[in-house]
Amino acid sequence: MKNPGRGVPFGYDSLAEAAGCGSGLIEKLATGSQKTADVDDATSLAEHLGVAILVLFAPPATPNQVGMTTEEDPRKE
Image (cartoon, rainbow, N blue to C red; front, top):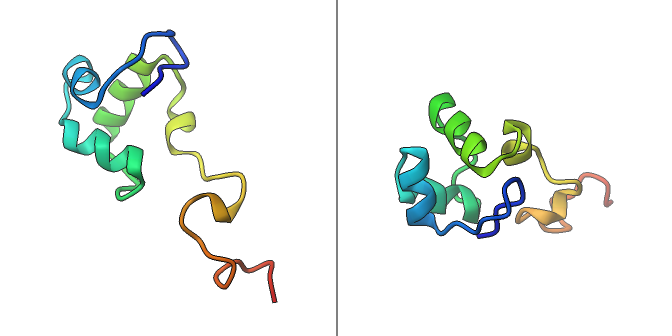
C-alpha cells in the first residue's frame, strides 16, 4: 500500500500499528467491504497516511469504480 502523503509504503499491519487500530479494519476499508470507520480511527489513519480524511472516504469519481454494474448505473437506461 503506497503512502501518498509521506512517501513511505505501509502494509496493513504496519499502518494499523502506527495508527493504533486493527489491521482488519484497514483491510476492509482498502478492499471496499467496509465503507466507514470510527471518527478516531479515521482521523488517525488520515494523519499517519499524511492525507485529509476526505481523501480516504470520498466517493468514487464514477459509480463503476466501486462494484457498481452498468445495470445499476442510474445514467444508463
